[in-house]
Length: 471
Image (tube, rainbow, N blue to C red; front, side, top):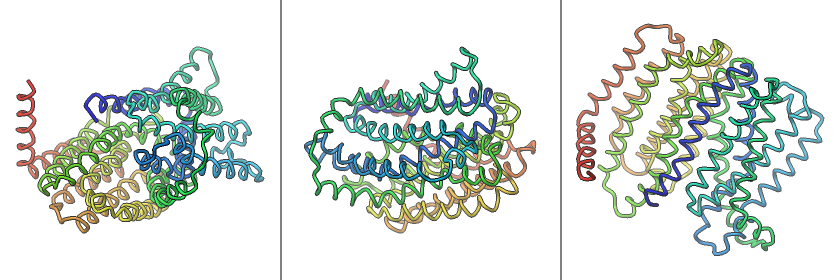
């Protein structure tokens, strides 16, 4: 993968993040907090549906892509099991004597149920078509799969101003579904040379069994991680209501900008890591990456803590809690990104069950803390639960890596991350009503510099040398 291709693939997550940051305040100003919470439930259900009904066959498609000559037949095999299951479950749900829209959105509406089902099916197909484009290394087209839904949603929401539409959830739901449908039409056009021939391909039963044996074990871990990152929305809906959910959801969405960095790092890090391992990487090289990632995580966390007071100025008064919620929400992608380096031993030794155990353990911790904290602290309780759960997720992955591969230095990392978790928890519990909080955040980063002083100087010298060589 050359630099040009890397840039093309990076456009997608960056563009999607920028569009989300533009769209969210727009939605917050025109729709009620409750409707923002309902939109979050919609996005959570769409994400769960893709994770569940795909049966992780898109990962089997990626795994077999370079091994199977008939790529079109492979695509058909990857999509058939999940499509059959999704159709069956949808039919069963629709004939049951209860309203799906009422259960999810507290609104009994046949229109909302229809839009939900349509959105699920379209999202299901988009997921597979995106992986076709990805494996063909069509970086710009792959980026379009991430940007298009956000761009269409922003376009349709802007129609509120042009046509003076009623700002209610049914309108928001319609706009979101239309954005997904239009996106699917574009992706179907971009991949027509793949899925059209695939329709008439024969089914290779042996290959299908092999793909399912590879993908099905991945479903449990995927669902556990999905639950870890989204269960707080369900607890907030049932224990605190859509108003608290709306504020929290907006905080998580804004913090999602940090996830872009995590996503880009993951795309580049694993190919590089396994190339190093194949060539016999030195442990000191991995330690260098871990230390530098710790410094970067501390820097981003401190900056978010010091500048979080700006966000309430950009949003309606109902969202003022975002000032202290955002810092807790940012910790989630930061812990995940850091665990991508400290947990390398799991991938290197191919002991993926430890990664699944980390997700399941954190899932249980998160569920218990959400149940205990949300009734008293509302959205703040959900934020605290997520911070602690992801901290546990990070620790389990790190310790598993050290046990499976080699015992690298991690004591000062734990000490530093514990300090960040404590200050974040203090900020949430006091609702940022403490004038010296910026001093705490600045002090934590100074502590980081002192603890990793030699590594920081080494990295700065390396970057300076690289720049001089390039110039």
